[in-house]
Length: 165
Image (tube, rainbow, N blue to C red; front, top):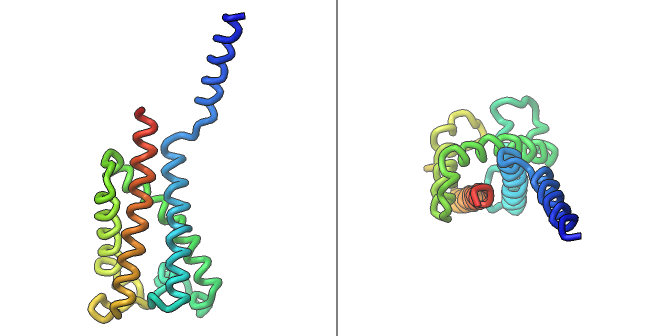
């Protein structure tokens, strides 16, 4: 009877290990859902005029037509950001997965904000230079990017620590 119980425990542990998702799959899900959640928050900020640019900004360099400025364009922008966010999550995994600190996520979010609003600014025809943006747009977008960075950073670092321990 004791041997059967030990065997059952071993089988249960093996099933549990087989059902666990791989770390890269978790990183992809964290990135996708981080993109969905924070671009939805960005859309609400855009809808309520806290920010001048919505998620459809990502479509401006590539998509033609005025549909980008409608709610459908915003929803497609949210999906595009969620897809792009998978790559961003893997970038965080590559660079900072071992850092279990809120500051790493904050820094990552600030770097992403700088990348979009300064470096990639010429790609987005609907985005003014930072010097020409109103303070509500700057502060709200900074906060969104920081929260996104903390979400991605803490989630990936937590999963990394769980995989190691």
